[in-house]
Length: 496
Image 1 (tube, helix red, strand yellow):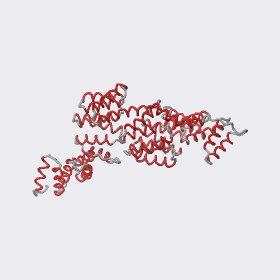
Image 2: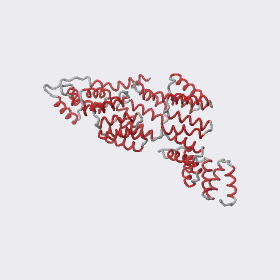
Image 3: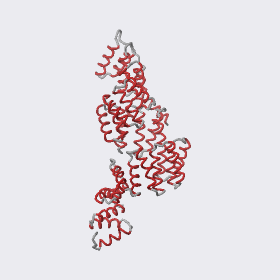
Image 4: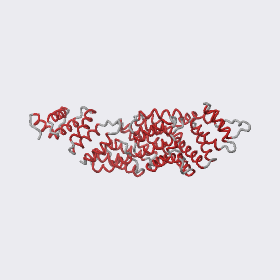
Protein backbone atom coordinates (compact mmCIF):
# COMPACT_ATOMS: atom_id res chain seq x y z
CA UNK A 1 0.00 0.00 0.00
CA UNK A 2 2.68 2.60 0.82
CA UNK A 3 4.35 2.08 -2.56
CA UNK A 4 1.03 2.53 -4.33
CA UNK A 5 0.42 5.74 -2.43
CA UNK A 6 3.88 6.93 -3.34
CA UNK A 7 3.24 6.13 -7.00
CA UNK A 8 -0.02 8.06 -6.90
CA UNK A 9 1.72 11.06 -5.39
CA UNK A 10 4.54 10.80 -7.91
CA UNK A 11 2.16 10.58 -10.87
CA UNK A 12 0.41 13.70 -9.60
CA UNK A 13 3.74 15.47 -9.96
CA UNK A 14 4.55 14.18 -13.46
CA UNK A 15 3.07 17.15 -15.36
CA UNK A 16 5.23 19.54 -13.37
CA UNK A 17 8.34 17.47 -13.86
CA UNK A 18 7.82 17.30 -17.62
CA UNK A 19 7.77 21.09 -17.85
CA UNK A 20 11.44 21.31 -16.95
CA UNK A 21 12.21 18.98 -19.86
CA UNK A 22 10.75 21.36 -22.44
CA UNK A 23 13.38 23.11 -24.51
CA UNK A 24 12.80 26.17 -26.62
CA UNK A 25 15.45 28.06 -28.47
CA UNK A 26 15.81 31.65 -27.24
CA UNK A 27 14.78 34.41 -29.63
CA UNK A 28 17.79 35.24 -31.84
CA UNK A 29 20.03 37.79 -30.15
CA UNK A 30 17.94 38.02 -26.98
CA UNK A 31 19.91 38.65 -23.81
CA UNK A 32 19.16 37.20 -20.39
CA UNK A 33 17.98 40.60 -19.19
CA UNK A 34 15.61 40.96 -22.13
CA UNK A 35 14.17 37.49 -21.56
CA UNK A 36 13.77 38.27 -17.87
CA UNK A 37 11.81 41.41 -18.69
CA UNK A 38 9.60 39.56 -21.20
CA UNK A 39 8.98 36.85 -18.62
CA UNK A 40 7.80 39.44 -16.09
CA UNK A 41 5.39 40.82 -18.69
CA UNK A 42 4.02 37.36 -19.44
CA UNK A 43 3.59 36.57 -15.76
CA UNK A 44 1.80 39.87 -15.21
CA UNK A 45 -0.52 38.99 -18.10
CA UNK A 46 -1.29 35.59 -16.53
CA UNK A 47 0.82 33.52 -18.93
CA UNK A 48 2.75 31.60 -16.29
CA UNK A 49 3.84 28.82 -18.63
CA UNK A 50 5.19 31.33 -21.11
CA UNK A 51 7.04 33.13 -18.35
CA UNK A 52 8.54 29.86 -17.14
CA UNK A 53 9.77 29.00 -20.61
CA UNK A 54 11.52 32.35 -20.97
CA UNK A 55 13.01 32.24 -17.49
CA UNK A 56 14.35 28.73 -17.97
CA UNK A 57 16.04 29.78 -21.21
CA UNK A 58 17.36 33.00 -19.66
CA UNK A 59 18.81 31.13 -16.70
CA UNK A 60 20.79 28.95 -19.10
CA UNK A 61 22.40 31.85 -20.96
CA UNK A 62 25.73 33.45 -20.08
CA UNK A 63 25.14 36.06 -17.34
CA UNK A 64 21.69 34.56 -16.81
CA UNK A 65 22.08 34.12 -13.06
CA UNK A 66 19.60 36.91 -12.35
CA UNK A 67 16.86 34.83 -13.99
CA UNK A 68 17.63 31.64 -12.07
CA UNK A 69 16.05 32.77 -8.80
CA UNK A 70 12.77 34.10 -10.27
CA UNK A 71 12.55 30.91 -12.36
CA UNK A 72 12.70 28.80 -9.20
CA UNK A 73 10.26 31.12 -7.41
CA UNK A 74 7.70 30.76 -10.18
CA UNK A 75 8.03 26.98 -10.06
CA UNK A 76 7.46 27.15 -6.33
CA UNK A 77 4.39 29.33 -6.84
CA UNK A 78 3.04 26.61 -9.15
CA UNK A 79 3.61 24.08 -6.33
CA UNK A 80 6.10 22.13 -8.49
CA UNK A 81 8.06 21.23 -5.38
CA UNK A 82 10.69 18.85 -6.70
CA UNK A 83 11.35 20.93 -9.82
CA UNK A 84 11.59 24.08 -7.71
CA UNK A 85 14.00 22.39 -5.29
CA UNK A 86 16.25 21.46 -8.20
CA UNK A 87 15.98 24.98 -9.63
CA UNK A 88 16.86 26.66 -6.33
CA UNK A 89 19.90 24.41 -6.00
CA UNK A 90 21.09 25.33 -9.47
CA UNK A 91 20.37 29.01 -8.87
CA UNK A 92 22.40 29.00 -5.65
CA UNK A 93 25.35 27.42 -7.43
CA UNK A 94 25.55 30.34 -9.85
CA UNK A 95 24.91 33.18 -7.40
CA UNK A 96 26.74 34.84 -4.53
CA UNK A 97 25.99 37.09 -1.57
CA UNK A 98 22.38 37.94 -0.75
CA UNK A 99 20.83 36.28 -3.85
CA UNK A 100 22.70 33.06 -3.06
CA UNK A 101 21.54 33.24 0.56
CA UNK A 102 17.94 33.70 -0.53
CA UNK A 103 18.12 30.82 -3.01
CA UNK A 104 19.56 28.47 -0.38
CA UNK A 105 17.03 29.62 2.23
CA UNK A 106 14.11 29.07 -0.12
CA UNK A 107 15.65 25.69 -0.97
CA UNK A 108 15.77 24.84 2.75
CA UNK A 109 12.13 25.77 3.29
CA UNK A 110 10.98 23.59 0.39
CA UNK A 111 13.20 20.74 1.55
CA UNK A 112 11.57 20.97 4.98
CA UNK A 113 8.12 20.84 3.40
CA UNK A 114 9.22 17.89 1.26
CA UNK A 115 10.72 16.05 4.24
CA UNK A 116 14.28 16.16 2.91
CA UNK A 117 16.95 15.77 5.62
CA UNK A 118 19.19 18.29 3.82
CA UNK A 119 16.96 21.20 4.93
CA UNK A 120 19.06 22.13 7.97
CA UNK A 121 22.33 22.05 6.03
CA UNK A 122 20.81 24.29 3.34
CA UNK A 123 19.65 26.75 6.01
CA UNK A 124 23.13 26.93 7.50
CA UNK A 125 24.65 27.36 4.02
CA UNK A 126 22.21 30.19 3.39
CA UNK A 127 23.34 31.95 6.57
CA UNK A 128 26.98 31.42 5.61
CA UNK A 129 26.31 33.03 2.22
CA UNK A 130 24.39 35.99 3.65
CA UNK A 131 24.72 36.36 7.44
CA UNK A 132 22.47 39.42 7.65
CA UNK A 133 19.73 38.54 5.15
CA UNK A 134 16.11 37.95 6.23
CA UNK A 135 15.65 34.78 4.17
CA UNK A 136 18.60 32.90 5.71
CA UNK A 137 17.47 34.03 9.17
CA UNK A 138 13.95 32.69 8.56
CA UNK A 139 15.21 29.34 7.26
CA UNK A 140 17.75 28.85 10.05
CA UNK A 141 15.10 29.84 12.60
CA UNK A 142 12.92 26.95 11.48
CA UNK A 143 15.90 24.60 11.71
CA UNK A 144 16.58 25.71 15.28
CA UNK A 145 12.89 25.43 16.18
CA UNK A 146 12.88 21.81 14.97
CA UNK A 147 15.71 21.21 17.44
CA UNK A 148 13.65 22.70 20.28
CA UNK A 149 15.87 25.80 20.58
CA UNK A 150 13.00 28.24 21.04
CA UNK A 151 14.93 31.35 22.12
CA UNK A 152 17.50 31.11 19.33
CA UNK A 153 14.74 30.35 16.83
CA UNK A 154 12.72 33.39 17.91
CA UNK A 155 15.72 35.72 17.73
CA UNK A 156 16.49 34.53 14.21
CA UNK A 157 12.84 34.70 13.18
CA UNK A 158 12.58 38.33 14.25
CA UNK A 159 15.48 39.06 11.90
CA UNK A 160 13.67 37.16 9.19
CA UNK A 161 10.38 39.07 9.29
CA UNK A 162 11.33 40.92 6.09
CA UNK A 163 11.09 37.61 4.24
CA UNK A 164 7.32 38.12 4.10
CA UNK A 165 5.04 35.21 4.91
CA UNK A 166 8.04 32.89 5.15
CA UNK A 167 9.46 35.11 7.87
CA UNK A 168 6.14 35.31 9.69
CA UNK A 169 5.79 31.55 9.50
CA UNK A 170 9.22 31.22 11.12
CA UNK A 171 8.13 33.55 13.92
CA UNK A 172 4.97 31.47 14.44
CA UNK A 173 7.01 28.26 14.54
CA UNK A 174 9.35 29.73 17.16
CA UNK A 175 6.41 30.97 19.23
CA UNK A 176 4.87 27.51 19.05
CA UNK A 177 8.07 25.84 20.29
CA UNK A 178 8.28 28.47 23.02
CA UNK A 179 4.79 27.47 24.14
CA UNK A 180 3.12 30.75 23.15
CA UNK A 181 0.36 29.09 21.13
CA UNK A 182 -2.06 32.05 21.04
CA UNK A 183 0.69 34.34 19.75
CA UNK A 184 1.80 31.66 17.31
CA UNK A 185 -1.71 31.27 15.94
CA UNK A 186 -2.06 35.03 15.42
CA UNK A 187 1.28 35.19 13.61
CA UNK A 188 0.53 32.14 11.48
CA UNK A 189 -2.80 33.65 10.45
CA UNK A 190 -0.99 36.84 9.53
CA UNK A 191 1.34 34.76 7.36
CA UNK A 192 -1.46 32.91 5.59
CA UNK A 193 -3.43 36.12 5.09
CA UNK A 194 -0.44 37.87 3.52
CA UNK A 195 0.26 34.94 1.19
CA UNK A 196 -2.63 32.44 1.02
CA UNK A 197 -0.58 30.07 -1.14
CA UNK A 198 2.27 29.69 1.36
CA UNK A 199 2.23 25.97 2.17
CA UNK A 200 4.55 26.07 5.18
CA UNK A 201 2.48 28.83 6.78
CA UNK A 202 -0.70 26.78 6.31
CA UNK A 203 0.90 23.69 7.85
CA UNK A 204 2.20 25.78 10.75
CA UNK A 205 -1.24 27.23 11.43
CA UNK A 206 -2.75 23.75 11.32
CA UNK A 207 -0.14 22.40 13.74
CA UNK A 208 -0.84 25.18 16.23
CA UNK A 209 -4.60 24.62 15.98
CA UNK A 210 -4.06 20.95 16.76
CA UNK A 211 -1.88 21.82 19.74
CA UNK A 212 -4.65 24.14 20.90
CA UNK A 213 -6.99 21.11 20.84
CA UNK A 214 -8.78 22.27 17.68
CA UNK A 215 -7.97 19.44 15.26
CA UNK A 216 -11.25 19.80 13.38
CA UNK A 217 -10.23 23.35 12.41
CA UNK A 218 -6.76 22.18 11.38
CA UNK A 219 -7.72 19.37 9.02
CA UNK A 220 -9.23 21.43 6.15
CA UNK A 221 -6.05 23.54 6.00
CA UNK A 222 -3.92 20.44 5.64
CA UNK A 223 -6.16 18.94 2.99
CA UNK A 224 -5.79 22.10 0.90
CA UNK A 225 -2.02 21.81 1.11
CA UNK A 226 -2.09 18.15 0.10
CA UNK A 227 -4.45 18.86 -2.79
CA UNK A 228 -2.22 21.69 -4.01
CA UNK A 229 1.07 19.83 -3.53
CA UNK A 230 0.79 16.03 -3.28
CA UNK A 231 4.49 15.82 -2.43
CA UNK A 232 4.20 17.98 0.69
CA UNK A 233 5.44 15.39 3.19
CA UNK A 234 5.12 17.74 6.16
CA UNK A 235 1.39 18.13 5.47
CA UNK A 236 0.86 14.35 5.48
CA UNK A 237 2.76 14.07 8.77
CA UNK A 238 0.66 16.77 10.38
CA UNK A 239 -2.54 15.33 8.89
CA UNK A 240 -1.72 11.98 10.52
CA UNK A 241 -1.27 13.67 13.92
CA UNK A 242 -4.46 15.66 13.46
CA UNK A 243 -6.52 12.62 12.53
CA UNK A 244 -5.18 10.78 15.55
CA UNK A 245 -6.38 13.69 17.67
CA UNK A 246 -9.80 13.26 16.05
CA UNK A 247 -9.80 9.52 16.83
CA UNK A 248 -9.48 8.52 13.17
CA UNK A 249 -6.55 6.12 13.42
CA UNK A 250 -7.15 4.27 10.15
CA UNK A 251 -7.14 7.51 8.16
CA UNK A 252 -4.10 8.69 10.09
CA UNK A 253 -2.33 5.50 9.11
CA UNK A 254 -2.91 6.19 5.40
CA UNK A 255 -1.35 9.66 5.72
CA UNK A 256 1.55 8.35 7.82
CA UNK A 257 2.31 5.59 5.32
CA UNK A 258 2.21 8.08 2.46
CA UNK A 259 4.64 10.38 4.26
CA UNK A 260 7.00 7.50 4.98
CA UNK A 261 6.86 6.31 1.36
CA UNK A 262 7.44 9.63 -0.36
CA UNK A 263 10.17 10.74 2.06
CA UNK A 264 12.13 7.64 2.93
CA UNK A 265 15.02 9.75 4.20
CA UNK A 266 12.86 11.75 6.61
CA UNK A 267 13.30 10.73 10.24
CA UNK A 268 10.05 12.51 11.12
CA UNK A 269 8.09 10.69 8.40
CA UNK A 270 9.37 7.29 9.49
CA UNK A 271 8.65 8.18 13.13
CA UNK A 272 5.03 9.14 12.46
CA UNK A 273 4.44 5.83 10.71
CA UNK A 274 5.69 3.98 13.81
CA UNK A 275 3.70 6.26 16.12
CA UNK A 276 0.45 5.61 14.27
CA UNK A 277 1.11 1.86 14.35
CA UNK A 278 1.38 2.06 18.15
CA UNK A 279 -1.79 4.14 18.37
CA UNK A 280 -3.69 1.63 16.27
CA UNK A 281 -2.60 -1.12 18.65
CA UNK A 282 -3.67 0.99 21.63
CA UNK A 283 -7.09 1.35 20.02
CA UNK A 284 -7.55 -2.36 20.83
CA UNK A 285 -6.69 -1.54 24.43
CA UNK A 286 -9.30 1.21 24.59
CA UNK A 287 -11.84 -1.24 23.14
CA UNK A 288 -10.94 -3.71 25.95
CA UNK A 289 -9.37 -6.10 23.44
CA UNK A 290 -6.35 -6.67 25.67
CA UNK A 291 -4.94 -9.76 23.98
CA UNK A 292 -5.03 -8.12 20.56
CA UNK A 293 -3.31 -5.04 21.97
CA UNK A 294 -0.59 -7.15 23.62
CA UNK A 295 -0.11 -9.14 20.44
CA UNK A 296 0.27 -6.07 18.22
CA UNK A 297 2.48 -4.15 20.63
CA UNK A 298 4.71 -7.16 21.28
CA UNK A 299 5.11 -7.52 17.52
CA UNK A 300 6.04 -3.84 17.13
CA UNK A 301 8.66 -4.12 19.88
CA UNK A 302 10.08 -7.26 18.27
CA UNK A 303 10.22 -5.55 14.87
CA UNK A 304 12.12 -2.57 16.29
CA UNK A 305 13.47 -3.00 19.83
CA UNK A 306 14.71 0.60 19.71
CA UNK A 307 11.22 2.04 19.18
CA UNK A 308 10.62 3.79 22.51
CA UNK A 309 6.95 4.48 21.76
CA UNK A 310 6.29 0.78 21.16
CA UNK A 311 7.75 -0.01 24.60
CA UNK A 312 5.48 2.63 26.17
CA UNK A 313 2.48 1.13 24.40
CA UNK A 314 3.38 -2.35 25.60
CA UNK A 315 3.70 -0.96 29.13
CA UNK A 316 0.15 0.38 28.91
CA UNK A 317 -1.13 -3.02 27.84
CA UNK A 318 0.78 -4.64 30.71
CA UNK A 319 -0.77 -2.16 33.16
CA UNK A 320 -4.24 -2.98 31.88
CA UNK A 321 -3.55 -6.63 32.73
CA UNK A 322 -2.09 -5.62 36.12
CA UNK A 323 1.37 -6.80 35.06
CA UNK A 324 2.99 -3.94 36.91
CA UNK A 325 6.59 -5.08 37.10
CA UNK A 326 6.80 -5.84 33.34
CA UNK A 327 5.12 -2.48 32.68
CA UNK A 328 7.68 -0.66 34.80
CA UNK A 329 10.50 -2.46 32.98
CA UNK A 330 9.11 -1.46 29.57
CA UNK A 331 8.89 2.18 30.68
CA UNK A 332 12.48 2.17 31.92
CA UNK A 333 13.56 0.70 28.58
CA UNK A 334 11.64 3.44 26.75
CA UNK A 335 13.23 6.18 28.86
CA UNK A 336 16.64 4.69 28.27
CA UNK A 337 16.01 4.87 24.52
CA UNK A 338 14.47 8.35 24.60
CA UNK A 339 14.78 10.32 27.87
CA UNK A 340 12.74 13.16 26.33
CA UNK A 341 9.69 11.05 25.47
CA UNK A 342 6.95 12.81 27.42
CA UNK A 343 4.50 9.91 27.20
CA UNK A 344 7.00 7.58 28.85
CA UNK A 345 7.36 9.94 31.81
CA UNK A 346 3.59 10.35 31.98
CA UNK A 347 2.90 6.61 31.98
CA UNK A 348 5.56 6.07 34.64
CA UNK A 349 3.84 8.66 36.81
CA UNK A 350 0.43 7.14 36.06
CA UNK A 351 1.70 3.69 37.05
CA UNK A 352 2.98 5.02 40.37
CA UNK A 353 -0.08 7.11 41.15
CA UNK A 354 -2.99 4.99 39.95
CA UNK A 355 -1.72 1.42 40.12
CA UNK A 356 0.78 1.63 42.98
CA UNK A 357 -1.18 4.28 44.91
CA UNK A 358 1.88 6.48 45.49
CA UNK A 359 0.93 9.97 44.38
CA UNK A 360 3.95 11.68 45.92
CA UNK A 361 6.32 9.30 44.09
CA UNK A 362 4.45 9.99 40.84
CA UNK A 363 4.83 13.77 40.96
CA UNK A 364 8.43 14.01 39.58
CA UNK A 365 7.61 11.87 36.53
CA UNK A 366 4.42 13.80 35.83
CA UNK A 367 6.27 17.09 36.24
CA UNK A 368 8.81 15.90 33.67
CA UNK A 369 6.02 14.99 31.25
CA UNK A 370 4.49 18.46 31.61
CA UNK A 371 7.88 20.10 31.18
CA UNK A 372 8.45 18.22 27.92
CA UNK A 373 4.92 18.78 26.61
CA UNK A 374 3.44 21.81 28.38
CA UNK A 375 0.53 22.13 25.94
CA UNK A 376 -0.83 18.66 26.85
CA UNK A 377 -3.81 19.09 29.22
CA UNK A 378 -3.93 15.37 30.00
CA UNK A 379 -0.43 15.46 31.47
CA UNK A 380 -1.10 18.61 33.44
CA UNK A 381 -4.42 17.30 34.77
CA UNK A 382 -2.81 14.12 36.06
CA UNK A 383 -0.03 16.14 37.69
CA UNK A 384 -2.66 18.29 39.39
CA UNK A 385 -4.48 15.19 40.64
CA UNK A 386 -1.23 13.75 42.04
CA UNK A 387 -0.45 17.04 43.79
CA UNK A 388 -4.00 17.08 45.20
CA UNK A 389 -3.62 13.54 46.52
CA UNK A 390 -0.28 14.60 48.04
CA UNK A 391 -2.17 17.47 49.75
CA UNK A 392 -0.03 20.07 48.02
CA UNK A 393 -3.12 22.15 47.37
CA UNK A 394 -1.59 25.40 46.12
CA UNK A 395 0.52 23.67 43.47
CA UNK A 396 -2.42 21.48 42.51
CA UNK A 397 -4.55 24.60 41.98
CA UNK A 398 -1.86 26.17 39.82
CA UNK A 399 -1.52 23.13 37.53
CA UNK A 400 -5.22 22.37 37.31
CA UNK A 401 -6.06 26.01 36.58
CA UNK A 402 -3.68 25.94 33.60
CA UNK A 403 -5.16 22.65 32.41
CA UNK A 404 -8.79 23.74 32.64
CA UNK A 405 -8.05 26.99 30.81
CA UNK A 406 -7.04 24.99 27.73
CA UNK A 407 -9.44 25.84 24.86
CA UNK A 408 -12.14 23.19 24.56
CA UNK A 409 -11.23 21.54 27.88
CA UNK A 410 -14.12 19.39 29.12
CA UNK A 411 -12.60 16.85 31.51
CA UNK A 412 -14.79 16.31 34.55
CA UNK A 413 -11.84 15.06 36.62
CA UNK A 414 -9.90 18.26 35.94
CA UNK A 415 -12.66 20.60 37.13
CA UNK A 416 -13.55 18.29 40.03
CA UNK A 417 -9.93 18.10 41.18
CA UNK A 418 -9.47 21.86 40.84
CA UNK A 419 -12.50 22.40 43.05
CA UNK A 420 -11.22 19.83 45.52
CA UNK A 421 -7.80 21.52 45.64
CA UNK A 422 -9.38 24.93 46.28
CA UNK A 423 -11.56 23.32 48.94
CA UNK A 424 -8.52 21.65 50.50
CA UNK A 425 -6.87 25.07 50.74
CA UNK A 426 -10.09 26.45 52.32
CA UNK A 427 -10.71 28.73 49.35
CA UNK A 428 -14.43 28.02 49.42
CA UNK A 429 -15.65 30.70 47.03
CA UNK A 430 -12.93 29.88 44.52
CA UNK A 431 -13.84 26.19 44.66
CA UNK A 432 -17.47 26.66 43.67
CA UNK A 433 -17.12 27.60 39.93
CA UNK A 434 -15.01 24.58 38.90
CA UNK A 435 -17.20 22.26 40.98
CA UNK A 436 -20.32 23.66 39.33
CA UNK A 437 -18.63 23.11 35.96
CA UNK A 438 -17.91 19.50 36.91
CA UNK A 439 -21.51 19.01 38.07
CA UNK A 440 -22.74 20.50 34.79
CA UNK A 441 -20.58 18.14 32.75
CA UNK A 442 -21.62 15.15 34.88
CA UNK A 443 -25.01 15.88 36.51
CA UNK A 444 -25.02 12.57 38.38
CA UNK A 445 -21.60 13.01 39.97
CA UNK A 446 -22.15 12.55 43.69
CA UNK A 447 -18.62 13.68 44.59
CA UNK A 448 -19.08 17.06 42.88
CA UNK A 449 -22.24 17.66 44.88
CA UNK A 450 -20.52 16.57 48.10
CA UNK A 451 -17.62 18.97 47.50
CA UNK A 452 -20.09 21.78 46.78
CA UNK A 453 -21.87 20.98 50.02
CA UNK A 454 -18.62 21.29 51.96
CA UNK A 455 -17.88 24.62 50.24
CA UNK A 456 -21.18 26.03 51.44
CA UNK A 457 -20.58 24.51 54.86
CA UNK A 458 -17.33 26.46 55.00
CA UNK A 459 -19.23 29.60 53.96
CA UNK A 460 -21.87 28.87 56.63
CA UNK A 461 -24.59 28.82 53.98
CA UNK A 462 -27.08 26.30 55.40
CA UNK A 463 -29.55 26.40 52.52
CA UNK A 464 -27.00 25.60 49.84
CA UNK A 465 -25.30 23.06 52.09
CA UNK A 466 -28.60 21.22 52.44
CA UNK A 467 -29.29 21.56 48.68
CA UNK A 468 -26.02 20.03 47.53
CA UNK A 469 -25.68 17.64 50.45
CA UNK A 470 -29.13 16.33 49.67
CA UNK A 471 -28.22 15.86 46.01
CA UNK A 472 -25.05 14.01 46.99
CA UNK A 473 -27.03 11.68 49.27
CA UNK A 474 -29.61 11.01 46.55
CA UNK A 475 -26.82 10.17 44.11
CA UNK A 476 -25.43 7.59 46.53
CA UNK A 477 -22.77 9.48 48.48
CA UNK A 478 -22.05 7.54 51.67
CA UNK A 479 -19.30 9.49 53.43
CA UNK A 480 -20.55 9.45 57.08
CA UNK A 481 -19.28 12.86 58.24
CA UNK A 482 -21.13 14.76 55.51
CA UNK A 483 -24.31 12.72 56.04
CA UNK A 484 -24.15 13.29 59.80
CA UNK A 485 -23.82 17.05 59.45
CA UNK A 486 -26.53 17.07 56.79
CA UNK A 487 -28.99 15.28 59.08
CA UNK A 488 -28.29 17.71 61.91
CA UNK A 489 -28.63 20.82 59.79
CA UNK A 490 -31.79 19.53 58.13
CA UNK A 491 -33.22 19.35 61.66
CA UNK A 492 -32.53 23.03 62.10
CA UNK A 493 -29.07 23.12 63.68
CA UNK A 494 -27.00 26.11 62.54
CA UNK A 495 -23.57 25.83 60.94
CA UNK A 496 -21.05 27.12 63.45
